[in-house]
Amino acid sequence: IGVVYDSKGKYDEALDMYQRSLKIRRAALGDDHPDLATSYNDVASAYDSKGECEKALDMYQRALAIWTVALGDDHPDVATVYHNIGSLHKSRGEYDAALDMYQRSLRIRK
Image (cartoon, rainbow, N blue to C red):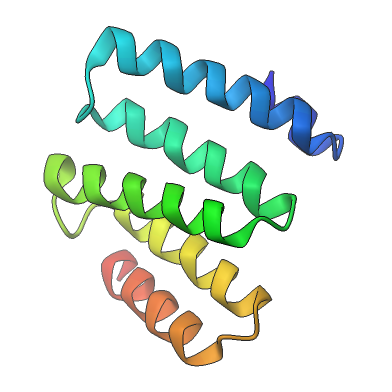
């Protein structure tokens, strides 16, 4: 449901749905399960769309921490979150940080 709201540009509603999912997953799976990282990534995306970059970055970093430990440094989900962090930095004009994140993502995808 959050994805649909996000696609419609209704970011507050999307964020609400993503946060509900996060709460359910945390209760069911614990704090370190890879599916929880998916919810963090979704919440980050909604914050990013709303222009709340600091909150988005925090959520992306939480997703990255979980996926790196659970899935390893070279997993495609890790590459995805590096790409997302790169996009956030690019939108803020932080081009060196964006380039670093994009290069990390590319290295994994190769």
